[in-house]
Length: 208
Image (cartoon, rainbow, N blue to C red; front, side):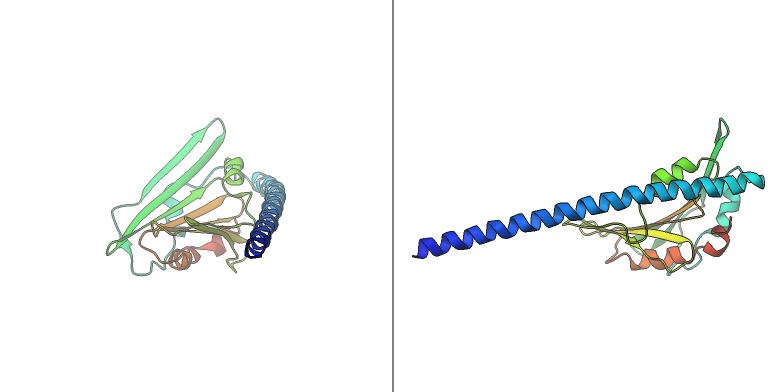
């Protein structure tokens, strides 16, 4: 009798596992379908933005010296660690630029990077286009990754927290050209990097 009961319980457990596996598969397929739609929508939006910028003669990425003015201002007590590093790349009619600043606060380090992909929209789509607001959520033993509803007009984001290393980062995009990445070590969640990221000058960037 006990053996029969044990067999029934084991069978129920296996059935439950199969149901959960099925649910996980459905969730993955659903996310893939949503991500594909996000890529398509992002590509169309990027093409429309680029068309409008071309019409007004705005076809080149902003120089990295000018990008500095749009970096986050609420640094949560972190102070600059060295001078900012910038780069401007132009080739065959394409251009993109980057400005990066590192910060320190005790044992924790933070890095803020702002990219302008105005001259090569495909890089924006490749880096960000598949993720819609709330369109992704993944959690396992190593990390938590999910879409972030920033509550900032025309700005969408992705947050990531590494459970083992205690590293956190967020990636925000706007205007189908600007991408901001904020990364910090020694964190208990992604809340600090989210606060820092929100303080960038999104009102100006989103209108370009």
